[in-house]
Length: 513
View: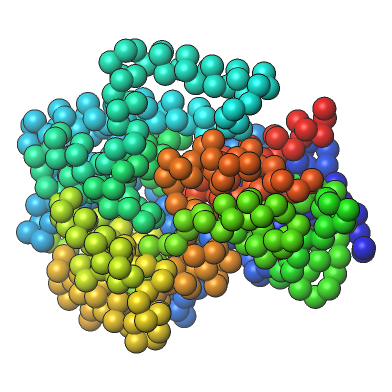
């Protein structure tokens, strides 16, 4: 082999960079190999039309863990912070909320929402504690695992009897029942429902959607920000932190396979035939790609391969980018509010109806949409006086009936634009270029199986103790020297860095023993 390292990280997504930087700070010689030309994985900024740049996949920053910021000395420059969410109404009577504050609803909803947010934030804080540590194994007699389980029980009791009972009741149920019980405003019910299902193959009536809502609140209680220069600047700052710690990062170096010798990893081989040696390989790729393609099923036990193959990870969120020759007109929206997060989710029933076709491999005829105009506060992303509209659109199933042909993509793009035009009349005349990334496109561009940005559905049977599957929930794979550090490992997706940090800590702890 051509070179030797203490650890090789496959993929320079944000978790891979966090893991590599912390391993290097722990005294390891680390190599990162990235298939694409730029670092960042799904957190990149790139041009999609002449002069127009956009955060290509992830476009809002709301989960970056404070411990990751502190340990790597991150201080990203933000174009906007503490963004409002504005639930759009066709008549201009919008609902606005940020943190525990809400406007545009009746007094009863103001009080109810504040109580709801306060309680959900408290539960999210409990969850966040365990997002930042290696989850315990179930059925083990090891002291560390038993101690973690005991601490979880103690922390639940510290909530108090009433909140503990509420938490245990809510964690597995759906967001629909909560919003209909608590809120009168259809717009508030719709927007909160959308927050709970964003990026998932779930509707408001699906079990687990309270858990996915809490996951969204973890780390920052849902505080939203847009980095100056797009999400790619976060990746570049992480890459710089890694290089400063001594990490070697090589781009345009796709890994073809993980080399296995005598039942343990021995390094990697790239698509060009180069080999790099290490007894520790850390994959930032998703679990399916790692085991089924890079390792090969012959090197792992059949039952484990079967569990990996059954991970649910078919994406349902598309990304729509529009180049505009000016700001759109939206009734009831002040000019300063074009820099906020705009949501099309008129009520919880609309969100559920949008989800229904995805169950049968069809895209939504009336999709739910999260929109931002990042160029409003960051003019560097578009030519002077012009703007970028960046949207996450649901539902766009990975396995679309008939496939994502050019005609299917054109039809869904038209559907999305028609949906937005109901709230922004005349928008279509301002569009000079467009780009739609379906889950199939996300899979191809960012090398994520199924185009699912969480590298696997967030659900109770694919979370914490059993993420990605039983026997691999503590970052270490059942092949000596192989670890996971990406979103497919605990705790999951979002630009948080928690999985990368947890994996690095686990590796350093094991190698110090």
